[in-house]
Image (cartoon, rainbow, N blue to C red; front, side, top):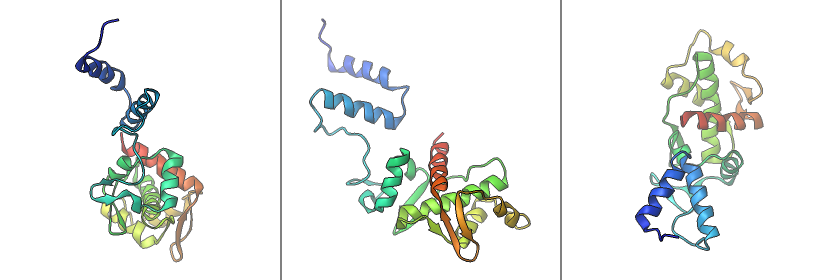
Length: 183
């Protein structure tokens, strides 16, 4: 067998890894290094804590947020494309997804709850905060907002006056939105 030089090996590895997502590439590389007995290498799969990204200490994320990320396969890199987390506030920095204002409104409420989970560990939020995201993103329709909220489904519970809380289906939907926004 012909001995590979590092450049040739790298070329072959890049060919194999190029069709995979960034997260899957990191997993494959980490697993390969572990199989080769090099698990202590500097290269590792993405982690939740112990590193900084965009100046945010990822250890600072509440344990419930880390658990949600792990359960739904959401990486910190993906979150940072959607939220700017600093000083206990998660600012939504992407476009709210949806085919129409009703869907966008609903998604804005789910994403507001997710932002609170990332900052406080609890997916509870005030109507005022979600409405503000709707206004900023251009999906707030004062004539139809209340009607949109009547059809909210089971993904969050509560009321305008008492606030809202994402349910388990809402947290799952939040993960789907994060994945959708990566495309």
